[in-house]
Structure formats: structure tokens, C-alpha cells
Length: 286
Image (tube, rainbow, N blue to C red):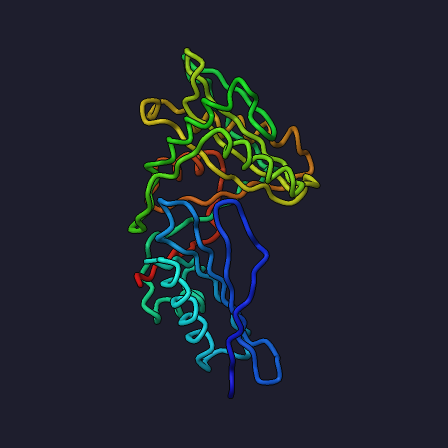
């Protein structure tokens, strides 16, 4: 069997990353598989690259995946990448392939879903704080403190995958919200303010444009000095109630949490999120 690898130009360009790709094809041009490598332009993350591999089931066990991985690893080295990152459902064919190729488990993600038809437990307000919410780009009077609050995610569990602090500024905060808006989806944010008006924490959810199916939780963070008071539980409960009210046709909410993040998993369990899937985020040092 003769297979050739064809480098591709991938149009999936984003402000902080871009992808390069390869197509594995038979001599007659019939595709057999593909590989994608997402390069991160952030200085704190440029040593990492996300690797995605697809081989048609009928074409497996012929070395095509190994060929594509070799091409992606070479491309990664050419761009100064030191570690490949790839996600696979725990125990799946892809997971076993990555393990065979030397990828180690960097962390395990627990994917959970909340059925919005079920009742949400009542959560009391946290004394000394108040909740605010908005859809889309943050209001002008909150955008700076919202940007500052993203520092609350800096110490989130990351397993053995080493990356630097992800730096945000106001322009990036606005741009991230506008990108969601441009693709037709809804970004909804609930945040907690302390007595001085500074943001102590926030939680974000993105809902499909038609308001149907499942929404996806994005970031949730509480700044270190405000932890241990129940803010995450309070914010997330309010998020559920408001999302249900704003989008009555929405079926559920999805979230993913690192398995070692016990406080957040406990919060999600209390609110009714139920685990559905485990994903291994594997890494290969080049």
C-alpha cells in the first residue's frame, strides 16, 4: 500500500493560534487520514501544540497514524514546540494509540452534564457580596475588574502539563466575547462583586444561537482571597436559574473539570451535574 502525505493550508486561523495540517492519501488520491497541529502564539504557551489525528477505521493498523504523527512531530519541532498535547476518550482506540506512541497522561478531565429539566437546589447568598450578570461583551464599568478576575484561573489544576500564566488584557477580554457573538452563539456571565465593587469570581456559559441543545460552561474562577465561602456554588446556581429563564428550550449544560479539582467537582455534583465521560489529555515530549 502506497501512502503519501500532503501538507495542507488550514483556514482555521485564530487570534492566538493557527493550525497546520497533513492529509494521508492513496496513490489515486483517496484520503486515508489526516493530522492537525495547532500552534499557540502566546509566549507562555508556544512550547505546547495540540495534536489531532484521524484515520478511517478501514485504514487502521497499516502505519498511517504513525506516519501522520511523525509529520506532525517534525512540524512541531520546526516551530520550536517541545510538547505535543492530544485528547482522547479514556480507553478508546485513540487513547491506546497515543499510549503506544509514548504519550503519557498529563491530566484526566471529567465531562459532566446537567439536565435543566431537573430541579436546582436553592443556594443562599454569600454575605458581603452581590451578583451581577450580563450577556456578550462585559459592561464598561466591569470589563477591567472582569479581566483582573481571570487571574483566579492561574492556579487551576493542570496535572503534569507545564504552561505559563495566561495573560489577559481588556482588549482580549472584549475580543473573546465578540468572537462568540460573531459565530452566532450567546455568552452569558454571572459574577460576584465584593463590598468595594471588585470582582471576586465569575462563571461563563455559552449557549447555541438557537437556544436549543446543550450549553457549554467556559471559565469559572474565584480569586484566592475569596475562596472557601461558597461563591462558586452561589454563582453557578444563579447561572443555572438565569440560563433556564433566558433560554427555555435549552436541554442541559455541559462542563469539564480536571479530576483532581475536588472543590469544583463537589460543587458541580451538588448542583446536579452527572459525570458522563473521562478524557485523557496526553502529552509527548519531543
